[in-house]
Length: 67
Image (cartoon, rainbow, N blue to C red; front, side):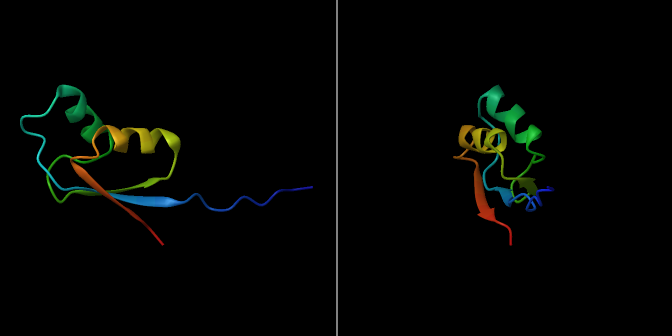
């Protein structure tokens, strides 16, 4: 029997604040998410790893579901 897997859920991550005067860990996390400056946007699969990265920089980004 073959299981049909649904497409992974996607989330849109938008950087809302600058990374100036933030910790080096936060700067690296923003780069790993594919962001870099305010108003940059990246779309990722909704995985626990990505959610953990977002939680680390939650004060710098905004998250929305993609339909």
